[in-house]
Length: 145
Image (cartoon, rainbow, N blue to C red; front, side):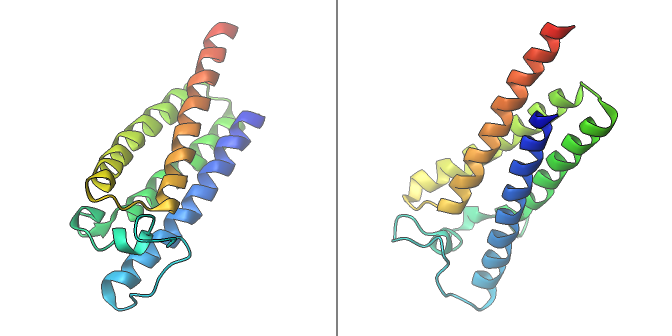
């Protein structure tokens, strides 16, 4: 049960981070070019990253997609806790891996322009942690069978 609370908590933290980044990206794109709390310098700057074309996918800033992924992960963790559906760890792992692949595209582009979003990197660490935890716990579930 503690495992699922950890996934739930991480997903909620990442979701709030994604909400902040999405609002900031929309503000940056529309009118407010002020710096964000995660703007450390020219290399580590969320607002500078939002000025690049790769920061939008389907006319949305990429953190907006995260606002969909992280609540799904949180809901799956709650559903598992309530109904004890052990196969949900595989679903969580699959979604996590797919999201890591998407993040890899963003990080690759960040390396191309040498501008990194610290808040995005924080979310990347969270999704990697969720993937590793769900992989380990999926292996534990298989051993218990």
